[in-house]
Length: 187
Length: 104
Image (cartoon, rainbow over all chains, first blue to last red; front, side):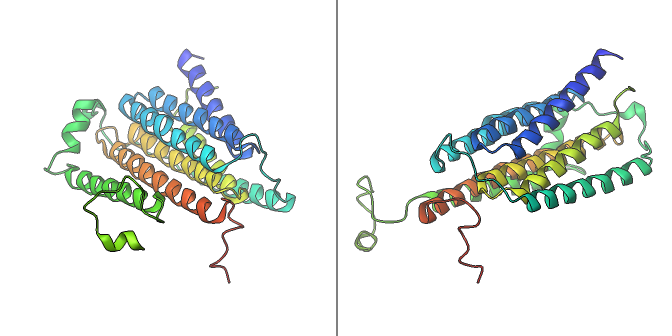
């Protein structure tokens, strides 16, 4: 048993155990922290598979961005230290049964299927930043320039939508622009 | 124990997916439901990367799908949290049981 194998099993255990605690604990702040460790475990698995760029993106976006956003919203909407109410036992049992049956079904299908390696070993593309960037912004066959632009428009729309949804929409604030429409100030 | 390969990664990603499904079914707080959705999206990303590494290493398509899923998940989380904050402002609670005006 090599060191790589040991590291793989440790990362797998970290990911799954923290994921279980993240959906199981009744304190919402602890759930967020366990989610953080689970996402770090997934990033470690990307490192283990030697996809370093994706691992870095995972750490920056998920661990640094989304988890902080979730903790921020927990502080905005929740009284800290208060436990969430307990779920009904029947609902929990039903959910666990449904999840386990789905898991068993998928794993049965996966283990019965033999995945065949169809590529050629001497054409392996190294997933480094240079290859990723060349293909991401390429307009030739296999380039991803159009989805890249679509995603940038989506991010812009999400940005404006977040501001519109979350901004308070009642009386105008003191710091409003002097050139704003006078009709909107009367409403 | 044998050398970990594609099947091990698939086991982890399936387990993570159904952990997320379990959380999605049992939780009532909107923020924890959002956390479960994040777990599900992460398991899908892990699947894409594993297939890209072990079955088609001469292309980078799985990696690009993962990058786009991460970008869209970030946008989705931001919009969801904006909606949650707005809901808290109008209902003073973020349980899904309390937002039931459209139910009847």
